[in-house]
Image (tube, rainbow, N blue to C red; front, side, top):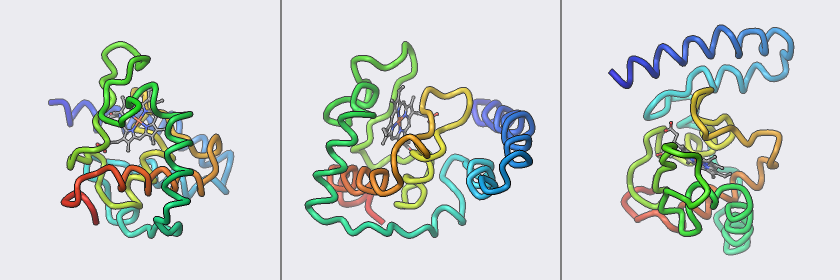
Length: 152
Ligand code: HEC
């Protein structure tokens, strides 16, 4: 049931939001179509996106700082979810466990952080608010916390 509702709301988002957006801003089409393709477990296109930022200590440290600024209040200072200031009943997930509802590759995690989890979610997209490089640094930071088994 939940996935049906989600699929339906995705369609509404596509028609009401992404389509007009795509027509108004052709340059954004790539992102619009990636958002359209955003599904549980991700899709082939975003799965294949390579992480262009090496997971150096500097990248991980920078990612931790950006995470603290934009994400910790919802996902928790330790990234284990349920941050103290998260909107009521939004239940931001644990980002250190092996479960990646929206896909587990670097490309899929990046895309989710960039585009958000859909209009009805409090997980908004950070594309345009936070530079891509910093979003990749966050991916590297989250990888450094996640169990080995979750790595791709
Ligand atoms: C206002 C609260 C809020 C903020 C701020 C927020 N998130 Fe989220 N995040 C959520 C919620 C709620 C979900 C669950 C979305 C869903 O699955 O529908 C989520 C989901 C995610 C997921 C998907 C996890 C999975 O299992 O696939 C990732 C990755 C993520 N957030 C990373 C981040 C990062 C990185 C930041 C900061 C740049 C951030 N979030 C900021 C609330 C938030």
